[in-house]
Image (tube, rainbow, N blue to C red; front, side, top):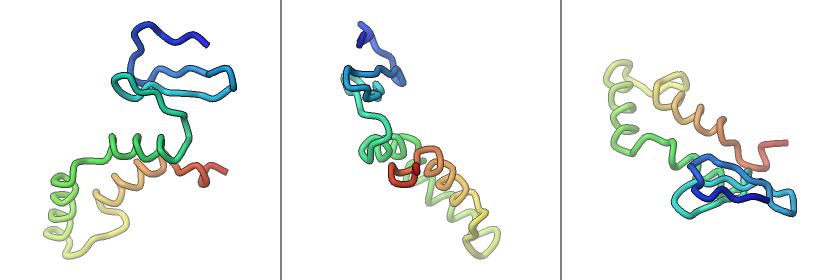
Length: 90
C-alpha cells in the first residue's frame, strides 16, 4: 500500500487487508462504503438548510404543495442514490 505524500480529496488506496480507503478531508481517510463514509459524503453534498428551505418555500409558493418530483425531493433523492447505505448495496 502506497500512501500519497500529498493526498488530494478523493484519492483512494487499498490497504494490506484489501480494504479501500478514501481521503475525504485534511488528514482524514475513511473506509469506503461504510455507514460513516456514506453519512459523511451525503452531508458534504446536501445543500445547506437555508437553501433546502428556500427550495421548499418556492415549490409551495408556486404549486401550493410539495411533490415527489419537486426540486427539493429530486435533489435529496439524487444525493441519497449516489451514496446508498451499505445495506442498500446488495
